[in-house]
Image (cartoon, rainbow, N blue to C red; front, top):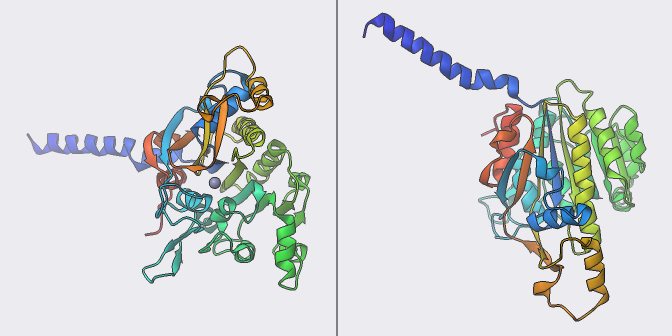
Length: 373
Ligand SMILES: [Zn+2]
């Protein structure tokens, strides 16, 4: 081979590498990432929720998402995770012990080290951020986005950390429950929740309708609220930032109260359908769960609404055993894999069996970011 041919060969190899490499990928990065976290929304719960709503299998919007994987949820110290360790893995890429919130155990016994969360990476880079939940805003899943505590029970520390961000100006939009908890926590510090949030630049309210106006907002309430309008208004606010945004939406799907848990599956599914329509093609949308739950579908006939069969069974006590009940619930988290489903830039990386920590890496890669070493 002559030098000339070699040079030509080298040039074409270099070009090919460029075409498939980072330079080509640049245009496909996500500007925004939204994580929809179905808390305790394991495969059986998603499946039963869809059949209950539509009396058809695989009838949810989640079922239409093109990229699907199965995510291992085990924690650092347990096969069955709690929400704290489960969400820490998704938000930081690190497995930790149950009850720990975005910290990992240190070499020094009894001590912990904070781990930077995806929300903090976003804040550091000037993106807008939001945390929306139908649980208390200080609860483990939302807290793992913005707080670092050795125990999820450290409610006062979590409230303090909401208003003392380590990066950027902290979460820009907060919607959740736990208003009474916030009032009690700030009262113990000789201030009020309203004063503290207002001083930090938030509009403070219990009404999600304030999301219609521009600016940072904290909506804390004690009652349920309609999810889809609140999340849609949040997305519109966050999307004002040309740098993009990161949003985490948690919807509780624990089926210890069967009706409520399965209704929440459908609420979140409607929300994902709507947000997928308005968020734009430059948004990675990821649905997953932090862990599964002991719900089983052990019976049921096609042709009769599932809701009716569940109601009839409940009215006839003692005729069935758990093994052939239409739907039975063993009240507790379970350790099997959960669905990860995605659409948008970077979604193609959600495939096969994967550890929950990979979801953090997938979201970072979608933004085109490298984690600190
Ligand atoms: Zn959970």
